[in-house]
Length: 88
Image (cartoon, rainbow, N blue to C red; front, side):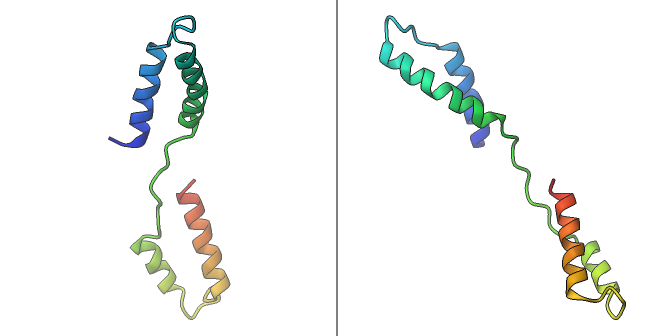
């Protein structure tokens, strides 16, 4: 089970088990402090695995050798564009 699932289950349990302030003021204060942190943490979308360049991408680079596009700057720009699109 990943950390996100654990946090989701903890939040669900904590929401269900809200302590009574009059009976347990210390427990209620701790509960009240952790709830917004847990909720805020779960608002952040789950991270996707990094997507690198594929063999097909590298083949395209190889096919551009000895052409106008055969410069480090052009290749770096192309790779940055591909990776940005693939990972956003």
